Image (cartoon, rainbow, N blue to C red; front, side, top):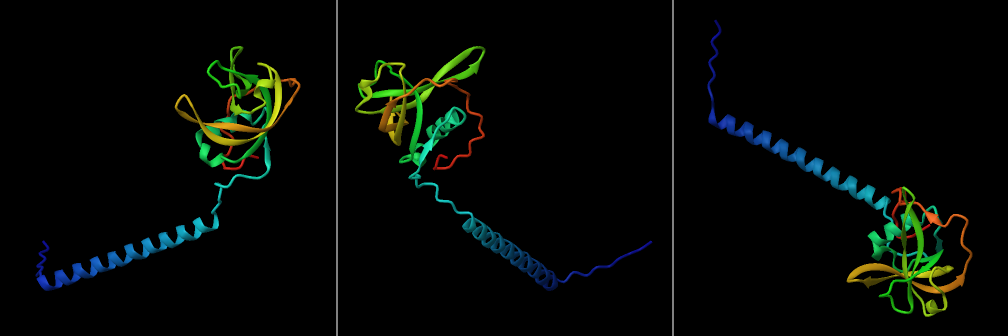
Length: 184
């Protein structure tokens, strides 16, 4: 049988606890400082200012059309000022003004069904083009409202007649588009 006699000294226990707490505080402080400095260093090396639109004109294609349409609708402010060019057909609703139309494409959704998708556009020359006529535009993304909702509106700087492409339909967004404030 083993008997162990332990004599506790309040002064030694307090001193030991104080030293252990001091060591823990030093370790936490060093770890926090390392994380702050490390995150500052890595965040400064990867800064990208994507709030400035590109002066280049981004060409929308049938392949990237709905991805770009989707991402611009999600973050309009980041794309205001971006110049774009694309083609589609004129589509108007009864509540549009005479200088407004949607530059539309049909998006395949399966089972031989499609939806009309596109950007709302404004142009003084809009009334010169008939419903469903194909045009190619160059314009700049602006922020506007439609039915009390913020939406991107393309302010057209150039519009011309175009021929209907061989495959006028576009596919639904595939989430492969990487959002930036510059469309390429």
